[in-house]
Amino acid sequence: MSAADKLIAGYQRFREGYYQENQAQLFKLADEGQSPKIAIVSCSDSRVDPTIILDCEPGDLFVIRNVANLVPPCEDTDNFHGTSAALEFAVTGLEVESIIVLGHTQCGGIKALMDSAGKKVDKSFISKWMLQLEHVRDDIIADTELKDQASRYSCCEQKGVQQSLDNLMTFPWIKKRVESGDLKLHGWRYDLYSSELCALDEKSGKFVRIS
Ligand SMILES: [Zn+2]
Image (cartoon, rainbow, N blue to C red; front, side, top):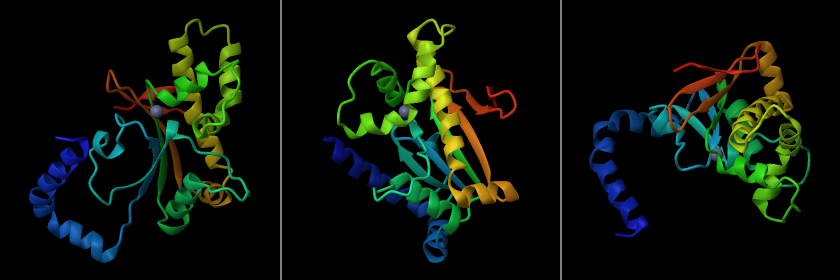
């Protein structure tokens, strides 16, 4: 069975099972539209599906996924800003109450960024995308307290979440709502091995276990 055939078989199971069992709720969502309370920015990594690891149902989460769960800064340029467009709809259209940036351990995007230090930047989209954390990477490399590469990867994953939270505040429609108390920002981190979920504590700047 090909990978695509496996998906079609999965879809058939969904249609005969979940779809039948939850038809009332699914039809309600179809009739009334979505109104999720939470937007989540998570990594494209196939191991970190927020709907699965947070045990959510259709309609619960507005999901924005990209390489390394990054929020770029608000920029007024003529490029195509996919993540910013999705955030704009979540905040100004859906009026979500929270935005969660969900980082994770063993992030391939972060590893690629750290491993690219000192090398010529290639023209790939991923290299350019990850360069938004270039200054974070350089600070980590200069930090003599981080003795091994695993600690540097971990530190960059965590600081990447902090940077994304800072960048969220560069969007005027996010800043306004955060300051009025209508929108909350959260930085979370999922550990692929231990399954611990941690949240960034604003005061200490450290991730503390929440589940
Ligand atoms: Zn990742």
